[in-house]
Length: 285
Ligand code: CAA
Image 1 (cartoon, rainbow, N blue to C red):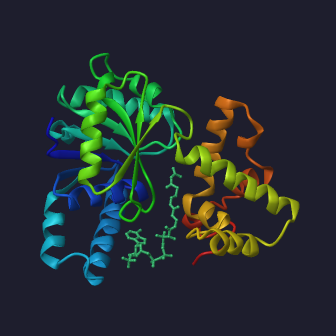
Image 2 (spheres, rainbow, N blue to C red):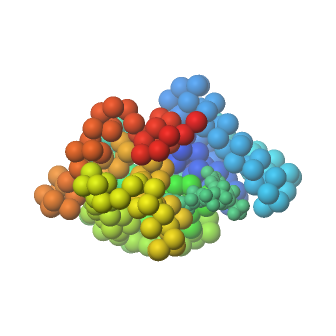
């Protein structure tokens, strides 16, 4: 199956990155947000990222203009009727995603693949909101932040995902320049399954008073060559997102490794969500 037009539903941090990368790879992209204010913010994020690429000499001005031409912005979900593939990147809420997938099932042509960028919600549960004929064409496409920089794409095979869907998604992901890994529909998939217990452990050691947050971050960066230490990375991901993934994993496995430490829960309750709120383990202007 050939993919020409791609829909991206949700133009926040992840959706805008996905839309940019897909348009830069030559596809026509239709981006949908729920209102004009959010759409404008998403557009600005993509424009700023393209300008940065031009300034750094990674993209010519003519190519950036061509990318911009391939992007259409809308608040109307019906426009997804032109898409061969729709990638959902809305809020991490199962009911909201199920409602969206049920609507996309009726709007998009029968051949269209519906993908979710969820990091914690079951693909099989999202697919269950669609018709039986669509379910084989539903899968997870989990991108990493920042999408234009991170070379990985994790594909998630739901219980009913067809091999053909997986093969099309793999070819599409490779055409974006990403390296593909495939996981079962399991909370945390592959990367978060390993990452989240590590981040939760780091928060527990901070609660215990092992060392300062700066020393632990420095230890991981210089001792392991990670680009960010655990508290920098938690702030970057968003503490609410981290808590949400941890709770989803704990719900499924009932294993204390995935239980959120009280400090994380208190910080989220206080609105200290990391970079996006200006304060998490560190402060940001
Ligand atoms: N969009 C586009 N390009 C960006 C960017 C963005 N938002 N942020 C940084 N870049 C580019 C820069 O242009 C720069 O490119 P060049 O080297 O070609 O000039 C490069 O990335 C490095 O950026 P900086 O020099 O500005 O900053 P840095 O060296 O501190 O790197 C970083 C920033 C890329 C974010 C790096 O710190 C990093 O890789 N951190 C770890 C990120 C990570 O682990 N992400 C996964 C999170 S988990 C997840 O996403 C899954 C989930 O479900 C929770």
